[in-house]
Length: 461
Ligand SMILES: [Zn+2]
Image (cartoon, rainbow, N blue to C red):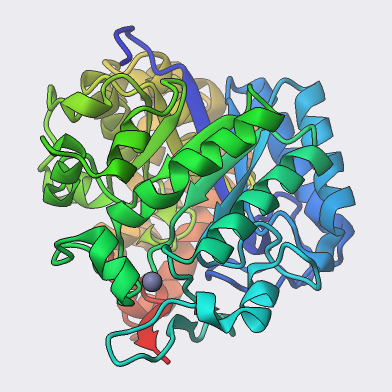
């Protein structure tokens, strides 16, 4: 439980394929899940080293990478160099991996610890739908080309394979900061062993907390045997106030759950908060689940991304609320997406907001404008103008031309290059929306509805 006035741990969450800290590079992708990596291989390291530099300068704790281990961008050797660079700067780079899907530990390639290769050789370890077919998610569109098979959480060979993969991972990359592990949110297995283990399964589709309990404790123990200091982050895919999480408070816990609750108190549990922030259902003072208070906790959000608001949207108020509510609930870590270069001034302010509000969650947006934005924009009134205009494309796009004229006047009054660059960025950003909206393009074409997981199709194949 965090009882201090600040939130000490701060993380960036990223996919390798859409992390673009180096600008103007062929192969950039700005959206997607499970995409191919489309840049030249050296860009993987260059992008992440740039992101690590930011983290070192702004009190960040670490960066998580999905797809860290791919043949396409250098496999283990490249990952080691990134992790090593981060260690030199005091930053932890950690692997984000699905244990029962999403490629496993070696995300993509011809490798012993690729989960997809394992499934090819061990089809019995694939989760089964009630009709006996394989459980998988098909990723369509936006570069998605993969069918992600789901593993059976009761299969002993798969269990052993996962533990062996983790043991290998932390030995082969001693510089690795840790892991965010996921049981995966792609569906559950309905084989007799899984049904028996999970018990009442009514709330367990497509995510199973019982499946997490079946693997997280053993996975954690395996990792800690190799690296006792590794960050162990267990993804839950839930907010701790979700009704499904009552399983953690079960008065008669299953053997798996008992093991889970006995994990070391340095274990991080990661919760999402987007819907709770949107609905206002998470309130100041809401308490963590009693049984889980002894652990560390991360609240993650998708502000300013393809999932919420659109990539590069200005999301300072969301980040402020994320920090305020986290601190009031005793959470000691916050996480946001870190895929985009702070050249995008909106994103620069979002990143700075995480630092500013994690340092003191009781600060206000008005404080942020004065303390953080004013210096970077040539004064308080300029900062207020930026704050007002940044979201104008959503509020009333017809006002964008007059806002741009005002921004032009502000720019003409400035002599600081960086302040001019930031306003120039904002002006261009707004103009692109005005150009499209005034020509009849629907907003939902550019920024899909907030709650959509728009690039996934849940499908049994
Ligand atoms: Zn099963």
